[in-house]
Image 1 (cartoon, rainbow, N blue to C red):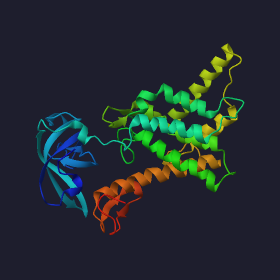
Image 2 (image 1 turned 90 degrees about the horizontal axis):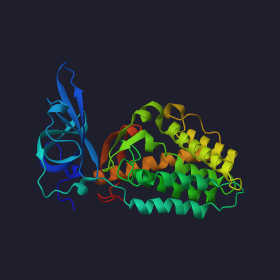
Image 3 (image 1 turned 45 degrees about the horizontal axis):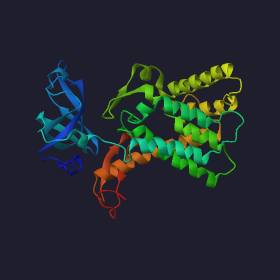
Image 4 (image 1 turned 90 degrees about the vertical axis):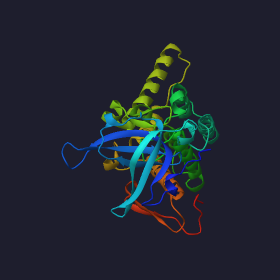
Length: 337
């Protein structure tokens, strides 16, 4: 258990001495040329915040990233929003446990991995004469299991935690499975569910995630983005199946039209070109994938912000939620619903 003061309990204009995880350090220049400060990303095990360390370059920060520090933190109101500054810092006391400061998905990774594949098997009956898309998902998952078990879904904003990618995928899959009760004959369930399972598979290449679940963008991620990289993963698996079929004629290959619909859904899952979609959703499966993705990424943010504010209060503006100030009704306790 982490006994140290949490960010949510800190009050403006009151200095706090506590232990936090120094996730990352980014050097920035002030408005005065030649003057620098560092933007620190800190974790208390529940949430991450940004904090400024003034008059300092990254080379002058005396502790390494991904280490625990004892820090004097000063919360203050700046432009009507709460911000944080670090006044002093040093190594954390020996009794502090690193694992207590790592933000993780609420379920064990092995359990989430198995739940995703079990859900696909339950919801998609194997009746196709060609290889079902579920086989494609299973092969890709098996080849990437080691990474999947700890990979984050993002560098920031949503599901940016240890096991975050599986957690995001699992929640989306549960939502997608319910669509059949409302629209039983309006879409291809196999395409939608397999697209959910693979929509962010390109993040295994787009992001570089360490053993703490902390991510940054890779060179390929910056150049191509996870959507294009994910489609490439599918193309490689389809090509491999064709090569096997040449050597073993009795082996089926994937249905090319099903694969086309799967790839289109993934290509369009950001919904709008200005949001990073390669194309606009042209099928109900692609539209549903986009909307389900948006629901889960935004719900994750609301859930996290509910943990940080008191009932009857509002957050500062959340720019990833279109500048919304999230309000927590006064009948909810501080921990959420």
